[in-house]
Image 1: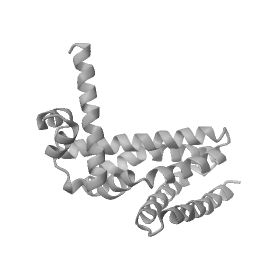
Image 2: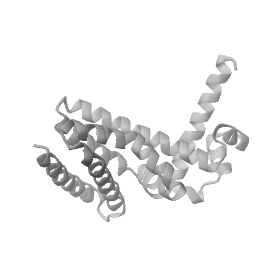
Image 3: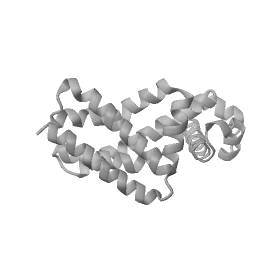
Image 4: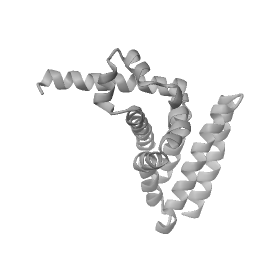
Length: 194
């Protein structure tokens, strides 16, 4: 494929992905059609099938891209916090909570993704943010046999907090409270490793 054709194909695939993210986040998986995605992206339905296979394949690509963006934000904030893994754990966890509470992330990653394909959702979560969390838990001194249990419980608590924040009457106050409670949980983890 000539370079311009490959570049055009990549741009088309990204345009489809961006359009699909907005539609899945705004309407939910069940209310989105591939015809609607194609119209939003300004491409044919065939182009959507060519790049993503089917609706589930497109949704999984959207979910993977969103997981990657969140993991990048978590990693960036953890590194910005310095070299102390205890400080990185706290900064990264708070960055995750901020990122996962966005309307797009809640609808796509916490409501629809587990319903569409629970195994794939678990795999993506473990591959992206989960791997960062397990790594920093090792670095702060959580005993190896407890790392997975601690990671799963912290991750689950943050995911549930995001759903709670999203459905709360005062989401800003709820987010502040969620951050405060997250600090309490992190204090408990860090105290156990001191």
